Image (cartoon, rainbow, N blue to C red; front, side, top):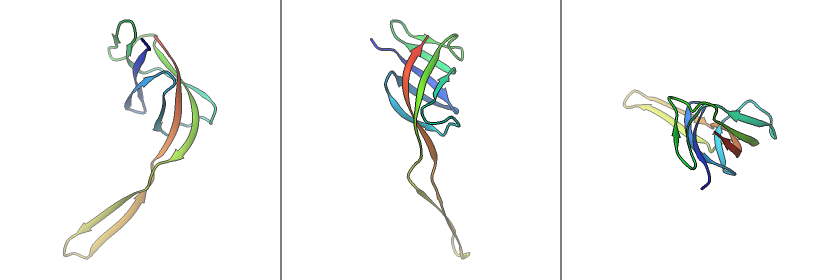
Length: 104
């Protein structure tokens, strides 16, 4: 049975497994760098381990694949009968990472 983990990255919880590619909020490291996430909330494998709030000694290692920006969303505000309309766009930055190993 392959190990999976629940890890907190930038205050968002992700369920990860080895060799998984996922998009996380933008990280400051360079492409090709290896990063470690120490806030592991749960590790499953032979027997599940749940942290209080984190699992001691557990860490998730990942490689940064690319930085990018997500799809554009449109933010539109209006107040009826007042002539107020405001349109604004937003693109959220992300970092694509590949999970290399789960230790713990």
